[in-house]
Length: 214
Image 1 (cartoon, helix red, strand yellow):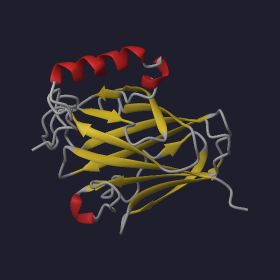
Image 2 (tube, helix red, strand yellow; image 1 turned 30 degrees about the vertical axis):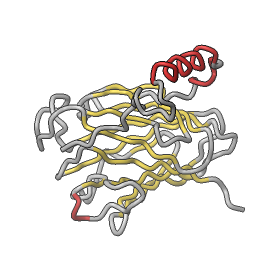
Image 3 (cartoon, helix red, strand yellow; image 1 turned 180 degrees about the horizontal axis):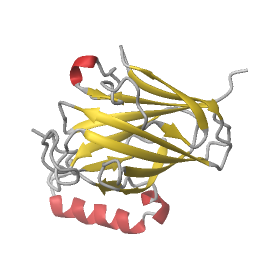
């Protein structure tokens, strides 16, 4: 069963005895707060049978569309503001049914296109994606989540800026794009297939831009 997101603050849980006074004070503070206090509010984007969130920080989603088929992939546009790993949170928003119609069910077959704007100020010479069913824990073979692991000769992995790719499945599910470059303020496009034969309500896609080390 899906675990709901964090609950809001209860209006009755204040340190003072008068709840009404505290609520009035809180409202006054919100009115007086500068507008930029809410500029970084997380926005959840819905597409197909999924939602996409930048809630873990370090980047911003600027758009989402598609249903996840080969002809109509899930398209996520992003802006990365640093050259450190960031994590995209993905949740199902419709019932889970393996191999069900795309868009109507979270069916475990997700053709993806990710367009990433490099706003880090540094050139990227590689870009890696990693799938995780549990945050900060490697995805193993038995969880069913991978970059189309069953297909030994994939023809759906491509990037506008990198000529080659490598896939690693044990002990991680990783997809590394290499032999290319993304200059600052340029956008790179990545296309690949994610499969999840035991679909979960929530999973994660770690994105790791690489910079020269020498």
